Length: 266
Length: 300
Image 1 (cartoon, rainbow over the protein chains, first blue to last red):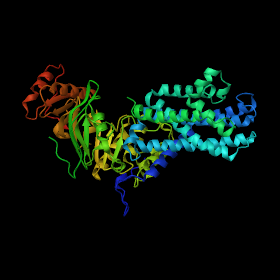
Image 2: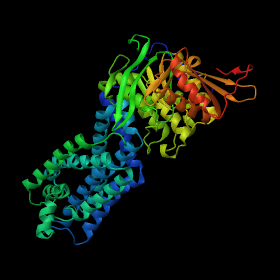
Image 3: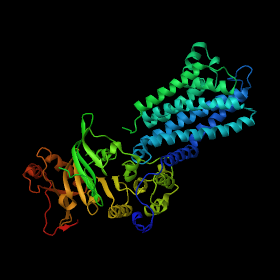
């Protein structure tokens, strides 16, 4: 710390010093960059975003689990892995990041800055999608090494499913972050993630579940997303019902966040 | 009666009320803040200072009354308005997983013409912990970083909620100099504090807040003067003008609490109004006598 003049007093000749906001896109990109860095630089977040999905990939590739008859094991493994990766980032990572932001007063502070609440959410969505792309690249490379030979049509079909799934799980993550205490946010978001992956129609097709249970799991966002990803990436049967279920979760999630998300911790 | 908004006035709050359930956080609070001045909101914890700032920064909407900040209703503020108002919130508002200097760079990128980040970091000593994670910073370091975030956009008006809490004396002096420098260059500074020390020698005007309303307002000398008696005891003299009789004891109690925290005695004078008789009677009931001395040294 040195005895320099106060920042306001430093002369600066012709530059316009009127306080004004940066352009909206720049603000949102700045926030997206901050959040992406937070996810990628945090060991626990990386564990959930990359390591756990990678374990799912390797496990399903090597063990005789979660397979669909006539479909290469690597294809069902990739579908399950990318679904796991999507849920980890959209739900768990975002719930934890946002929950801490809420407890630390960041949500209040951003609302007073040019970023605002809309910009904060915009940046968050962009950060989630960016992280997803990085996850797909890393896990995709691992899958290629393990023998995955993707088809372009299937990959393109997965894009809209991916976007709807991001909304459904992202809003669920925000709802957990915006309604529960921080300690509960950590526990609930991790528990929900593990339960959905293990028993929510992600790692194993719902057709392998007992009949009644499978019907119920089909109604979960994880079950619907898992089935749709298998339809796109593992020659699974396309179910319009799954698409409707996932869309309903996404729409309900948006309304629930608008209705119940609390920006303060009181 | 509050003055109308003019070019000199940055903040006008008029008769604000706000309740959390049955508890009244603001109870007819009115205040103003001028450009180029430091306005201190002084009062004990729970007096309504933070709630008043939250209304002025658009975080809370008052149940009744009006607030204008730089001529705008903060509840409907645009990004352009928010760029003109800097806010340091009480518990920091800092992203716990970010590092100190990158967080300041991020905040600067939200503005079109921010201050020089390195310069602000050096001035507030943030460069000493530039790469440290926010969650590992000490309370004082967090305060400095939060202050930097509040001023990085060159605001016309800046709200600082308890800005020097948790700082060591040297840093505290530095921050006080910075706050004075901001006011000198035309920024309206509104700060809250429950410490008399923060007000004396720093604020141009002070508003004593208790139970959600302003009980005394004016220059620091008008409202509070602190004297050192011959035997070294600190005497605080508070002037409350136009205080309704029913709230006068509340004012006295709260001021006494603040004074006691500093080991000071308290005098309350009426400033000509007769309605503080109750306060004086109340004070006379106290065991601790007020210290008077002709050799008092005016510390203000």
